[in-house]
Each structure stands twice: as C-alpha cells, then as structure tokens.
Length: 524
View 1 (cartoon, rainbow, N blue to C red):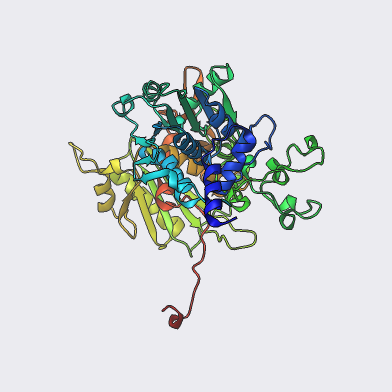
View 2 (tube, rainbow, N blue to C red):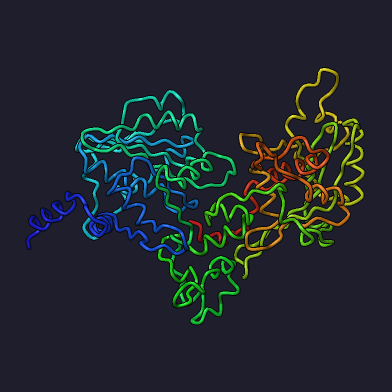
C-alpha cells in the first residue's frame, strides 16, 4: 500500500468515533500510546478505564471521580475533553479548579495529549487549530477554556461539558453556580465531571460522596494501586522473599488471601505510577495522609491531632550534637512557648535511605512574663544546653507588629541578644500555612512506613504533654481538620514547633541527595 492510501486509512480510523469499550481502548492507544489500566486491584474500586469509558461513551449528567494524588485524574479528564471536542462540532468545555493552578492541570494535560502524545498510528494534533495558554480551538469549531474560581466567571455562557478539578478545594457556592453553565447543546447531552482527592473531614467532598452513595450520581473510586506499575521479580524475589523489606508491604499484602493465586496488589497492577515514588511518599507523609491521599480511604477523623505520638518519639538520643546548628522557635504572647531543636539530615542514596530526623533537646513555657524576661530565660537555657553552637532564631511575624504601649516583641528579643546567625526569621505566613505546618509535624511524628523521625528528649515534659493533648476543633458533632482554639498551653508549644520546622525545613524534611562532583577541567 502506498503512503497516500495509508495516510487516508489512518485518517479514516482517527475520525471514526469510538462506540464501544474496545474501540475506545484501541483509539486511545493508537493515537496517544496510552494503555489505561482496565482491571481494579482493590476490592470495591473501579478500574481507571471503566470510569473513563463510562464518561466518554455514556456522558452521565453528573459524575464524581475520587482518586489519589498524582494518579492521572486530570489527564484522563483532559483526554475525555479532547475526545468530546474533536468528535462534536462546536462543542465547548469549561475547566474550573479550586485555584488557577488547579484549573490549569487539565489544560496542561490536554496540551500533552494533543502535542506530546503519539501512538502507533501517529497523533491527533491535526484536530486542534490553536492551543494557547488559557484556551484551545479545534478545527471543527469546538473550544476549551479555563475559568477562574470566582462567582463572576462561573456565570458565563452555557457549555455542554464542564470539568471541576479538585472539587474538594472549590467553594460549594461557586460549584453550585458553575453547574448552571452545563446545558444540552446541538444534540449533545450536558455533562459535568468532578474529580478530586478527599482529605478534608468536612469539606465539599464529604457531602458529595454522601450524595453519590445515596444514588444522586455515579461515583468511581480508585487508589494508587490501580495505577501502580507492576512490581518486577527483581524487586520482590521469585517467591516474594524480598517483600518484608519493602515499606509498601502492609498495604500491598493485606488482601493476598482473596486472590486466586495469592498475589499481592503490586503483582496485579499494571499502571504508570512508579513504585519508588510511592515508597518516597510512605516515608515522607503520616499514615493518616497516606491513607486518605493515596489509598483513598477517606479522611481519618480523630479528636487528637498527633494520635501516632507515643514512646517511640521520646528518646535520650535527642541530645545536643555540637556538630550541628541549633534552631530556636518562639511563640510569644500571654503564654510564651519555645522549642530548641536540631536537624539530622538524611541521605537518600544510602542503602536503605536514611531519613531526615528532628531532635528536640529543650522546651520553654512561661505565663505573664515580659518579652525581655522571656528573652533572658531563653538565652540562659541555650547557653546551658547548647554552648556556643550556631543558632537560628525564628518567631511568629506578629511579634513585629507595632505595640501602642511599648516596644515590639521582636525588638525586645533583639535588644536582649536573642538573635541567631541571620537575625530573627519570621515563620512562613500564607493561607493554609498552619495546616501545612501541622501536617509536617504529623509526618515527622510517624511516617506511613512506621518510622519516627521526630524525637523529643525526656526532659521536655511540657512539649511531650502538648503533643499528647493537642486536639482538633469540633463543630456540629464532627471533628474538623483544623486545631481547636484556644487550648493553652499546648498550642503555644505546638505552634512554636510547627512554625520553627516550617522555617527550618522548607523542603518538608525530604532526604538530601549529594551533589555529583567532577574535576574542574571537565566542567566545560
């Protein structure tokens, strides 16, 4: 067959709308090179291809995908957007996320599908006329646009398709307004697809999941094992004898007895997510975060924040190391709390990898004392425990606010000599900083692989009590995913800890990777 006839045949196949699951799978593989997992791994979960095919071929009026972080939800939503656009004339799609960056996730995935992807029969980029930063135009007149998460933007023209990405982060009022944009147009049924992880105990996803389980609309749940790469024999051993050394084993082997051949989950999966990447998550996040964000078991609700904190986090090994700098974090106020800690950096290339650890060697708590008195107390404490080691001091930025009756707290600290090698640093302050700081502490208390990376010296009795008693807020009979306020004196010590760690560990405590070295004459 000559080249022109072959091109004509390929174009005919590309322009033929898939009508069945098999035709859809063949089309996606032929023109994108993707093989979407078609079998669920965990009991009660959906296969990614099953939910994708239902969305493309049946176009339900409203559907919810509950999946793990980084698993390809946005990518599959983008692929559905592309297919709907290229097979329907003048078909418009709007994309809305909880933030501009989230809205752009699907759009970036669309760019990957159109421009970067390609399969055995080539790509489908010819279907798109232009792909700009915020909108795409198809040859047949279809269009895709990004919306800002604002009340004004979601009251625009009607569209046939609406994508709500990370719906757990979208304000419910904005979501409800956006739903009014979806409308049957030119013989195509309106369809709204909502995708998200679920980690907020009382966030939008909680009510959406409840509605879906009551039959209001279809819901598909899948976890990281549905998209995990197949575990090779070189990693597990022929008879799984190497599995006990893998941090994923507790979850991977939990239902082996239900498989006819006794295979763990990673031996049944066939996705794209790297096993090494998942192991990194297990070592870096708390069990609660791993269960909700990657295993999709819903948010864990508990009155105590650090429920994994136990005797494994209290050790005399958290003693002063003269070879390491000292970090001092102070939360000032009626109660002034402070923690003194050192960071023992891990090495990712060690075998096994060495985790970064935090050793807390002293704490301080006072009530009703002046900033000057607290500063002098802390200086004496540091001199007693840490000698002349380099010091880095941080505090709440509110300590620099103007005080109508006297000097600011920070200026008093500076006057009394409570300053570090780089002065006094302010803790990071932005929307969600408290939540992220507490998640960092929680992950250090106990990572999902069971390791305790935060050690407190037994003499820090007040901080130990704070870790054991720090609680979540409770509203309408439910535990919230933010702390109770106030809960003195526990919050003054925990606030100092989370603020100091957020300043000292902007990378979240990930293991360091040594720089490769080369001789100077090989640089150029």
